[in-house]
Image (cartoon, rainbow, N blue to C red; front, top):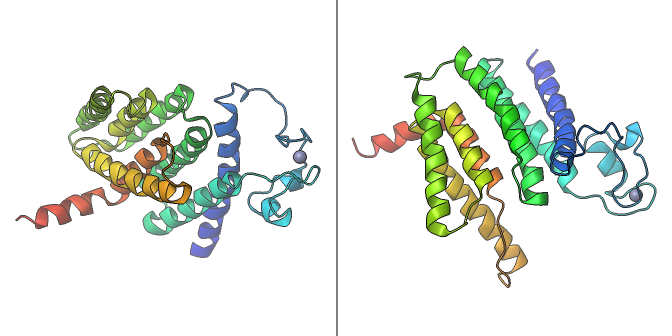
Amino acid sequence: MDIYYSGLCFVFGLVLGSFYNVVGLRIPQHTFLSSSRSVCPACNHTLKWYELIPVLSFLIQRGKCRQCQQSISYLYPTVELITGLSFLLSYLHLGITLDLWITFSLISLFSIILVTDLRFMIIPNKILLFFLPVFILFRICQPLEPWWSGITGAIAGYGIIALIIILSRGGMGAGDMKLFGLLGLLLGFPNILLAFFMAILIGLLSSSVILFKRGCKEKQEVAFGPAIVSGAIITFLFGDNLIGAYMNLFW
Ligand SMILES: [Zn+2]
């Protein structure tokens, strides 16, 4: 049954990843609720069902629109694959537990923000407001110890980024601040501090890779949202082990 559920989680992630591409592109442009079908952004040709199969359509069409031969962004299959693979890996790590559903929701938040933050440099309030009740519900089903840890975590998360914004005069955005507050609610205190540390580490690593590839000619804004959510996912899955290992260094 393990193979069956593994395959199911992978496909579930691929299909949701494809949906998150649409959410991430449409929410910032306020066209999410329009019932229009997906079109090629270059020639406006309405995509048929067989052009919308996650990853496969991209591979079969060799990354080009069937109508106008315009290249399709690598971001689409990348988001689909990231969502599918991380759903699969988290199932293999956690089995079918509440923690798995919490991880699925974090991965979903990551995939959507990857699209909005890379494409538009924003983290839409609508996305955060959607995940707020979801995270609260998770914490009602599985309370933190002590229960108010989520509240202090949210205040700490919000506060840390607010401080960075004040000190760096805009090095991060209000979206990052709200996102980190939301994640603090789920992770609690002091785990949110570990998530912050991880996010900085991931952010520095990924931005140095990007700068290395593009060259450092011009000052570029870096989308920090995906790094923040990755830090939170690592903390949620391995935080207690990491904090334990760190403490062992000193005691
Ligand atoms: Zn086209």
